[in-house]
Length: 469
Image (tube, rainbow, N blue to C red):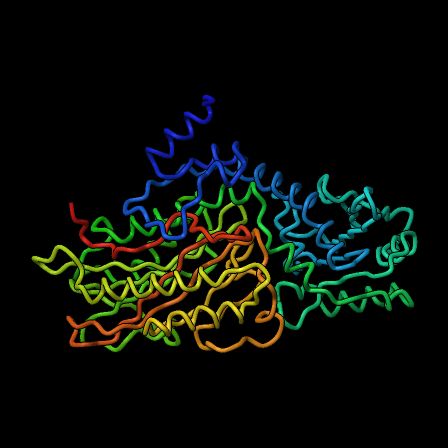
């Protein structure tokens, strides 16, 4: 074994996950040893080290260059597109453009126009910026305002010089993330192109493919991101944070936001923490935003929905905890059985993942499996990555368990994609006089084309407050 391999094994043995710096240096998913689909969440996950801002920027820029060098050409050739134009105004960025800016660019500058041109064969894809500034060393500037004062006319010149048969633009009725060309910018583009406008094609598959595909370097780090999120949740679901009779669910929501901010990370949605308890109706997803907060009491069944943003990637996690009553050492069996039912819904969904299947097909297969087991479940799983609710197939909605219309329901599952396995099971709890309780789980996973693996395990046991020694 090499010295690095020996160090890696020692670190994994001690913490269950590699420090991000080691993961980045290794750069492969296989070295990380991703969690198998059935793996259990570590009950007290250790908080990994978090990179400082300069190291984060270097990592983001390294990943971005690799993505541009390796993903764009196959996507364009798969779609039969010769040229792809992306247009962004400052503070009104196309969502795809936002993911292509270097780490030190917090927004596009003035009007930033990026052009990809496939020169064919081994010449590969040329990248250009028709903009006042080059986009770092990723998109060299193809416009000199002192020589050609009209930026849009320069765009037309670039196109005429290269004579593409088709020019893809980011417009879509199905995917907001692929609908980044604003109406105003499109009018300017079409006025500049004149007769060349007939070459424009609306193609959301380029944007979706770019956004949904994860590289090996990203996946080497992703388990550490999920471990960070799990560690934050574990700290919150503990006696260190919760004092029954005093702490409220609203306290915990802001505790999560503050903790994330203190770590120098971001959240992509406001966390939610809710209570289910005996003699109370089942939790309503539709009304969750109306909850102003409950005082947490012994016997409460808690739920959290929480996600962080780090290195431009996102996590999305839902877990449960139970506040022990005096004399209790475990949660009621009905609650434990309910979580086990939710785990079975997870298993059924993961078994439906097959390359080429649509979101609608995966939903139908998973629903057939859980219904055969007599489980009342709801599936609403989504892609994950550069956005929390990422681009790609939609596998059900919490308020629609039938086929999704349009491309989001029919889009095919592709390898090298990350997923938020989000769903719930509803079950009666005998200890609560048969009251229906909703068991909502969400864990992050990776599909390599053949198998789905949780990035940092999944919750199979209810977290207890206070912790049992």
